[in-house]
Every structure is written in structure tokens, then in C-alpha cells.
Length: 438
Image 1 (cartoon, rainbow, N blue to C red):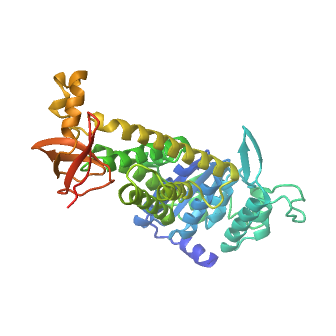
Image 2: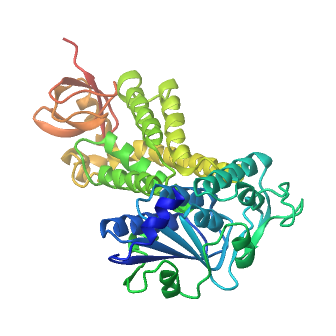
């Protein structure tokens, strides 16, 4: 494989070389930037991609996803260690076909750490072992000495003459050349081209796009929690009113933005959407098939499944216990806030105009209808009257009783449009109905 890469890099009739910069902390935005850059470079049939690395590392899951993108790339890649490529940055460098050092560049120091109460500590052995194996496998794919990569992650790895036990390996340009982890030194991208005999090739610098920044914001824990809350509230309100309106659109957009952003950064998968869909179905069964008001076992199962959908979408395979706890807290808080808001909506919605015209109060509740001496008469007059559902009742909807179109609530949970109904309770602002017996 190394021979094939070398042949590809030495082609003289190249069209162009693309340059991507990975600077600062590695985040979810780095993943989308790298994915788009590689995709566009391949579409342009570029001869190779040069990654200029100057990073102390960052999110482990983001680094692993970036590594997978580079290993799957159909175009030769060169890592240019301009200053430092540490931690997740070291993994990105190892995933490239070639590694070139700038004078003073360093590579390594990749043991995973956890941030707890503003201080850092090494991750447990389980995570260190997994990351060590990933580094080893990445080095082996490119014909590099695997023990060197392992020593960057695990203090217990000893290499005679290079690293002692209890120390993490960080390679200088000279060290890297001695162990086969460097393909040369260069002071600029132009000198990199000269190393591979492509001096006349134009350089195309790929800049971060606005979408990279948007995805980075959408995957922030706080923003992700807000998307969950707004999305769930919007969909539940939409289920309670006839037709499809602004609340359903807002809910779908929020949940769509949540899963879209987490899917692009390699966290969410089809299992996350499966959990969410199963949870929504369970809640629909609870509301429309099992009980109209009480929240039973189907509803609880639905909440758990929805929570699992969000949970699996927020965490990667190498997430720490701290990140897991944070995700659980965000999801639990989001579900709790959503349930509280839903309860408020269910008790208040029929008395408002939240449906943008869908809730139309009867003229009987305007003007003198609020006078106490008439309220009992008006309520008693409605009970027992028969009519027809002019919309689907979810359980809120509209019915026609004595040629008057009124807002009704189905006590049975759901009734389709056209069902004969009878008023069984009058609460002033809303009429509770059930299906009329044959």
C-alpha cells in the first residue's frame, strides 16, 4: 500500500493540491470541515490533500471520526506537523499517508484525559486500551512501527532508547525520522510539494464553511438540550390540535436539526432514529388507543425509547463516564421540561388561540356569557346534545352541534372525522364529548 501511495504522490502531471488547516481544538466542526474538504478535493480530482496541523488535540470521538474519514479517502493525504499535532491531532496525522514535519514540530502525547471540575485526569484503563489499539491499527495500516504509536497513548509501553516506562512519547522531527514516522522536513507547503516533485502544481486552500460552525453550535450540549425540549413540545402540541401547523413544523425542524448535526459528526446512527420512532409510536398508542388522559406503561416505555434515541445520538464509542452523565442529565432535564410544558398545554390549550385560528371560541362565551347567573344555564344546555366531529379529534378538535361549530375534547382519546358525538360535559370554554352509541 505504501508503494502505491508513493507512486500516486509522484505523478508529475497533477492538476492541483488542496490545503486544509486544522488549527486549535479539534471539535465536531473539525469533522464536517474535513469531510467537506476531502469530498470537494476528490470531486476536483486533486492530486493530493495537505493537512496543516497545529493543534493540542480535542474531543476524542471527533478525532476518531476524522481518522476514519482519512482512512476512507480516495486521494493521497499528507499531514504537515506545522507546530504540534498532539492527542487527537496525532491520530489525524497517523491516519494520513505521509507525515512531514516543520522545524520544531512535535507529534504524540495522546493519552486520553477526562475533564472534571475544571481539572484533568487520565481516562480509565478501558478507554486507554481502546485508544492504544486504534493508534496501533492506524500505524500498521501505513506500515509504521505500531509500538511507537502505542507509546504515545500508554505510559506502560517501553521502547529501548526512545521512551522509558511511565512516560508518554512525543516525537520531534528528528525522532520521527529515526523511527520511520517522518517523510521529510519542510518550512512551507511549497517545500512539501518539492519533496514529492510537484513544484508547479497550484495550491487550493479550502476554508471552513458556515455550515461547519452551525453544526459545531448545534452539537453543543446546551443547544442540543434546547432542540430536544422545543422539538418534543412542538410535536405534542401538534398531536393535540387538528391539522398540521406551525408547532409541528417547529418540532420537526428542531428534532431534524438535532439528528442531522449529530449524524454528520459521526455520533448519531440509524439506531438512534429507530429508538426515537419506536418511542413516538408507543406514546401515540398510549394517547390514542389505550388511555385518553392517564399516562400508563406504553407512555413510560415511549419516553424511555425516546430518551435512548437522544442518548445514543449524543455519545460516541469512546465517550467518557463524565460525558455519559452529562448526556443523561441533559436528556432527563429535557424530557422533564417537555412533560411539564405538555401538562400546562393540555390544561390551557382549549382556552387559548394558540392554534392560529384553529381554536375559535363560541359566541356563547363572549359578552354576557361570563355572568354567573347565566353560566350554569349555558353549561346545562349543552350536555346531552348530539352532533358530528368535523375534524379528527386528537383528542382536541372541532365538532358541529345544533349547527354550531364548537371546540371539543374527546374523552375517549381519538375519534376520526365524521363520527357521531354527544356532549357529556361542559366546562364553559370546552365541551367534552364521546362517540354516540349506535
